[in-house]
Length: 95
Image (cartoon, rainbow, N blue to C red; front, side):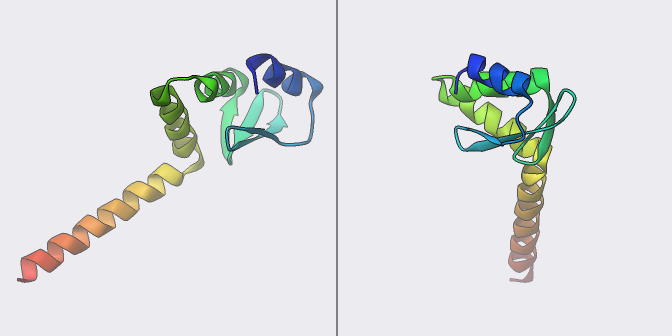
């Protein structure tokens, strides 16, 4: 999916979701696009498309982290890691 195809999809106001590199883009209203459930304005979503289409793996990871942060997945991962660390500390402290 190129940037131009993304712009065409937005301009058509399609109600069908768009898939870009394993992520789902859905138009939610004027200038709002949901990517995997996280809300982005058009300019941010366009930047995410650019990063996902980049040949640089760091750019692709950056886009994935941005999406995960907006849709709440990153927060759940951090909370899960904190819980694992707390359990490990408690188990080690009892020894």
